[in-house]
Amino acid sequence: MIQRIQSIYMLIAGIASLLLSTFLTIWHTQEGVFKGPDNPVYMFVSGVAAGIFLANIFNFKKRKLQVVLNRIGMLTCMILAGFMIYEYVTLLNKGVVTGPGVGLAMPLFVIVLAVMANKAIAKDESLIKSADRFR
Picture 1 (tube, one colour):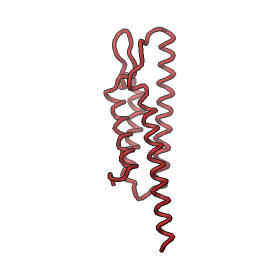
Picture 2: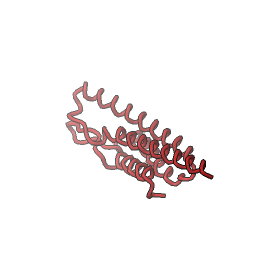
Picture 3: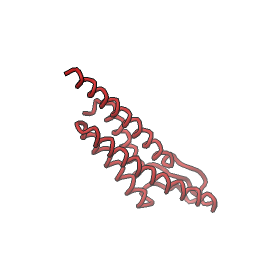
Picture 4: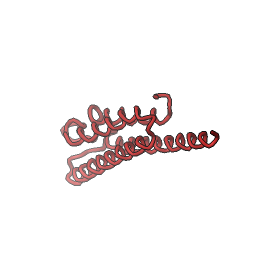
């Protein structure tokens, strides 16, 4: 059900994770730019997060499972953000990195989208429970 707002949030989160694993610049160096495919760990973890969010769209009848899978997706994005920020700060101290790219903030953006999706799922769940009371 793509017309539900939480499905839109999860779709955008999945697309953003896919962009991170393929196209987005994570940081700039003296030699050029560093992208997701330059590090297989970043590419794999962001691909897993994208797969979780995109597959989770089709669990619209299982709202509790959707919340759990969104939390797992958030956890993978937090781990990815931690690795990326750690490596960025390490390279920044060595003087290799000249500046951050859009991809460095992308896991945090995906986490915010997942939180918004979970809030919308909780709102949906409360609406269903209130409708069941009238029966």
